[in-house]
Image (cartoon, rainbow, N blue to C red; front, side):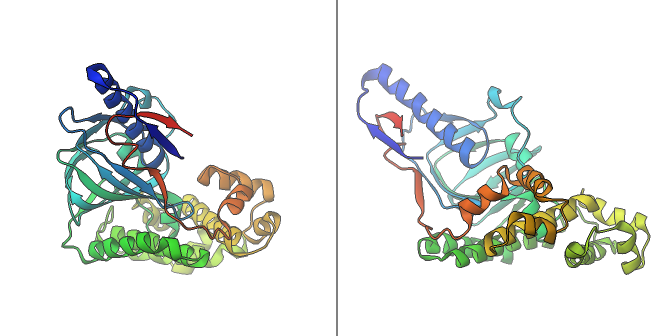
Length: 345
């Protein structure tokens, strides 16, 4: 999206119109980069802001520099489309944001990290009292599940005292700064590492897991077994139970710990394998479908579109061999700044 601006409004009426236009511009960016949110800017502070995006294939990475504002669920979103199946990661860089999500109030400040499900952010609200700098990362839930984190927390708030949180902040900053020079292979490696870090953080916090049970360890073993069996044909419950010498009921309980089923985990791992082949091999979609035990290319296509929202062919065309890693400006400080009329082009 390219946004241009020109000076044309003045006076009290014009100022009021300008404020409404800036609020709509922020709301539009929220819809595209995070979630549908209504925006109310401070009537006293007309400070400029800046939003930049630097995506890694299906990961949406956004750098936000926000003036004082409040965010709320707009009426139009109350009966909107189904929630996106994503994990939302917010990393605080400067300033503070008060967030209310899933009945939990938290403060996102410098060095803090917030991980939550996509449906949670759509039902929350926030307030930025004095300005905020943060980065957000949207990860498709199947990608996170394929990395071993089957559950996405409703709202996991962590401070800078956690070692993995500091590592994530440092690595995210390095990815952001290094993207313009990265090759396609390096960007794919960065994508994989970001997902693995978030999965590791969720697992280390024991979200949704009873530490007194042996089921979490079994669950990790089951994930590895599924990955090893994907190419061999259908993954059967009875085979997993026999391999790990437990009952089928215990297998179900291991997946229920994190709100999943064996079927959903198998699907997530299979789609992740398809995505890897689309980006890293010259195999036809029909060959990939055969390799990963889909009925045919049409079956693969339906499953892939259900997860990523586009066809496998469109995904390959968009991301395979993409060597243009420049960070594009979604909205710059002039477009969100003082008296202007916005024209999108």
